[in-house]
Amino acid sequence: ATAATAVALTVTGAAGAMAACDDGEVVIKLSHVTNTDKHPKGLAASLLQERVNEEMNGKACMEVYPNSTLYNDDQVLEAMLQGDVQMAAPSLSKFEQFTKQFRIFDLPFMFKNMAAVDEFQNSETGQAMKESMVRRGLLGLGFWHNGLKQMSANKPLELPTDAAGLKFRVQPSEVIKAQMEAIGVSPQPMAFSEVYGALQTGVVDGQENTWSNIYGQKFFEVQDGVTETNHGLLDYMLVTSVDFWDSLDDDVREQLSTIVDEVTSTRNAAIAEVDADARQAVLDAGGVIRELSPEARQAWVDAMLPVWDQFREDVGQENIDAAQAIND
Ligand code: LMR
Image 1 (spheres, rainbow, N blue to C red):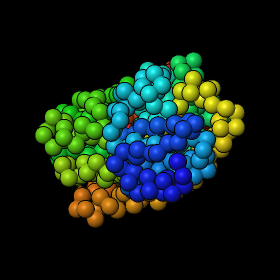
Image 2: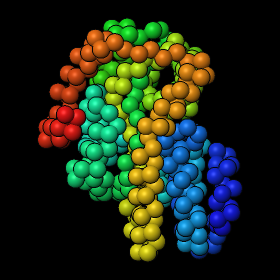
Image 3: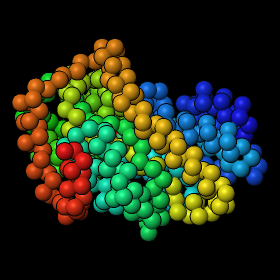
Image 4: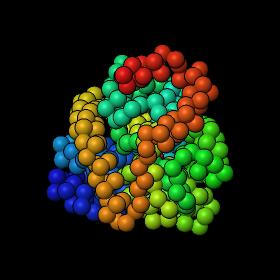
């Protein structure tokens, strides 16, 4: 693909990015589930596509499929192992079947802000996690930020007791299920693409997600409001298959790896801005945001913190200690 094609692709990206790959180019399909505008993952994937298609023209060609147009998150990792897709960036909550190490990222109130998350992920412990799934055929290429999660429901939520008895959509994570059960919520695992409809029809009462997802999927339209709890993290791992990665020529792998690292640090450094933009976009579109008093926030902390005890063994006390030391 030429550079001109790559630019045109970025513009039409949401339509499914059918890149004109030339003969002899390594084809890299990247499948993901979010929108592309005002979204950390959408923006990172677009930048990656642009740079690969421009700088690796003749050697490699990337096609990005956003908005669950190719696969849902519960299909994409299997598809990757089959060789049907070469890259994906599921949230860290979607790797249950491949590693339990990522459970630390789902534990409520583990990281005080995104700077702490960034520091932990870039530590030796964090970077080693990229290789925690190699024996299962997957290789992590980089952590991609999204942000902290907020709670929404079809009624006002101020205290965790307001959520008790409700049904919330959750990602398929044991930690998140336990977190919801700790506040008396019935967790309903469901694919991301189905959440809006489920909220609209009342199949579930509420959900938790980041500002970019609440805005991008328009959840605020079918909820009473969003409560700014910042209670947990939603981040991604950009992954590939070990087979695909090993099949690349050394020079191609090296160049691709450099581009991935640069895109990762560029987009991660911009996360505060993208998150704030999405929050503002919710307000501009008429969404209701409720901020918590320090006392109310403490009630959420007190209700959810006992969940750590259930997962200390999977996660490792030393990793919890390392994350907490960064918060201090
Ligand atoms: C979700 O399922 O809620 C998120 O993981 C979707 C995403 O990729 O941000």
